[in-house]
Image 1: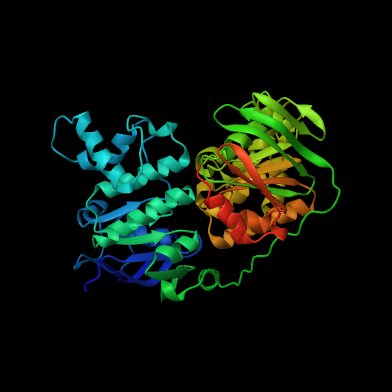
Image 2: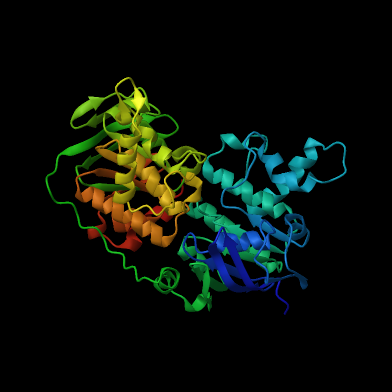
Length: 498
């Protein structure tokens, strides 16, 4: 059988930095081939070379559909059947869902007029194929991040692709939505379409893959039969390290209560919520998308107001009129949407980090002190071990894990009492995840209270003192990981409809 894609001796250098070194890579028709590795290992660079976005260094050989090329243009790659779902979605926020999905069917055509009905028909067919439903006339900017991800997936499936690259397609999807996607992958491969799947959720990799190619530091570690790989073995191949998760012990001390929530409700979002967090405690909220987790967090951060109930900070009732009130009360919030809401991508690393504490950098006359700013930036970069080139570089130059560290650092600089982390590992590889959770444990040991929101049971089970299961806008049950089995929590969460 002839490979759909075959790459030989692919290298890529950016400004003296070697991103890929002599990579051989092939994918067979109807195969699900996973490309695994930490951020910065070269996965996205290899995909861009195959998609024609950038050219490999001289000496590379590319073969698509049994046609040989030294370099490809994006148009050539698309004509040959290469489809890519990019990690950053690349959607048009002011356009409708239908227009975003169907755009590639009409761009480049000679038609003088395009009927809106035809656009809707194209979009509707691919939505039915994926098993999702949308208001096709809604603007993409009105959709939550997970729904935007599905729009990006639908758009790629419009074209008659022979090989589809999915770069972190499930990073913002719930378990149910992910299973829908994996079912679509199986449908495509049954039609002899090859799928290259990139995901930091290694359980998905092992569930869906036929083979796995592992990259580390721009070099190929090897190609493995997925059926012969375990989660621990794949992690070790990717990182070169053995990571053994352990449950956080139950918090048995009598620390003061930092946050207490009594019977708060907000129509259509959450109802009758009660819980508390002590100083130095990590409390998790686990639930699928739509459970009301983020909506609850936004009220705790003053972005919305509960219609009923009360919130207490250090035993005193608070009524936040805005997030400024919440920040003044000692609450910090790291958004689930790091790219759009957590960081300003066009700005430098140092500007992003100092954004929340500009008032601390001012001197007499309201002038900015570059010395004070540098002290703050240097302190938190060192404290969280952020890997970077220069603090003046754009934040977009950092890996996902290091961007997330900056998003956390800018709030730690405000010296909060309570840190809310909303899905902090979206788009972050397994090695960087461990680094983020080490930060969480270290912060808790220093007395910071943390509310960790996730839809991945393993994250809260191994990193929280207590876990609250949220579904349908209400808290269903409390778990203490030190006193329950992982499977018990997993069954409760993923067995609940929302």
